[in-house]
Amino acid sequence: MLQPTRLVILAVTLGILLATGLALYFLFSGQRRLARRLGYPSLGAYLQATPRTDEEKKYAADLALKGVVICSFCIFFGPFLLLGLFPFFYGARKVVYALMGLDLVDDADQPGA
Image (cartoon, rainbow, N blue to C red; front, side, top):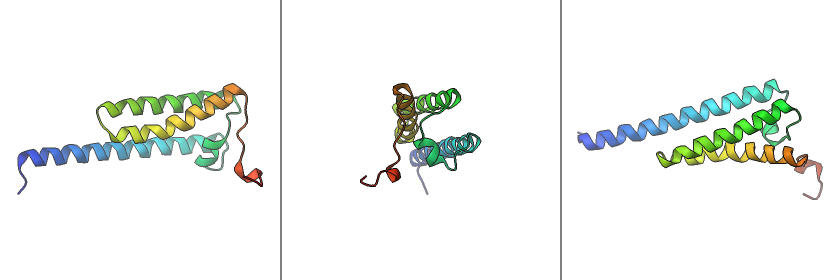
């Protein structure tokens, strides 16, 4: 039989893992729907593409800010840091490239890459 303190620790740990899993699911399913709505064949293609319209630039900034907010939860729950790094990286990358006026280079287009 589990002691009450171990039971509480187990419940908190399972709660954190469940919350992290649900956050991942909702974040990525929402991004997949957005990518399809914007005309991209997959989530990966959307994340690698440079924003073409003002709407896509807005969504890129939103993705970066979601990553920052999720990373800020790492103060309380460590797993959120890893969860927040992915949207922050891809969103910030898209925003910076859009601000610089650069187009992302696809490695498949470069024979020497």
